[in-house]
Image (tube, rainbow, N blue to C red; front, top):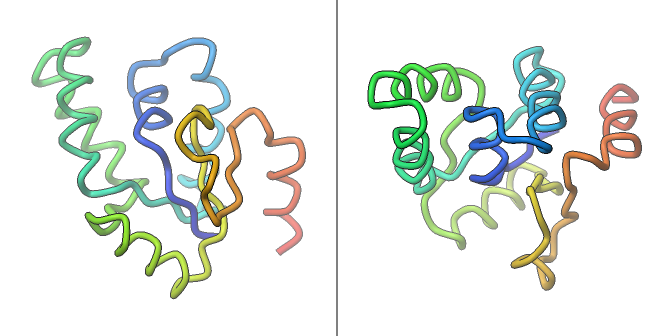
Length: 125
């Protein structure tokens, strides 16, 4: 299953932000084990580094980004390219920290805390 990870979910992992860290780390763990294939918007990478640098310092943010990008692959830059890739690669899910800006999305939007219904589907493949 291919999934686009929201910027805030990546930050929840890198900065261990509570209360979201536990569920975001579970998504990261599934990607590390290749249960799911995760992507992150290429345009979000610089944003993530910028925010992480404030908390972790420059070298800490670089080290964290290196680990993150070993697991989450960069996706295309524009929204139209991302939606095109979803369609071409069969991506139907997007994991977000919140639903505030995604009400009209044609995709299935999941919050990490919905794993009780989402994650069992991964193991049935």
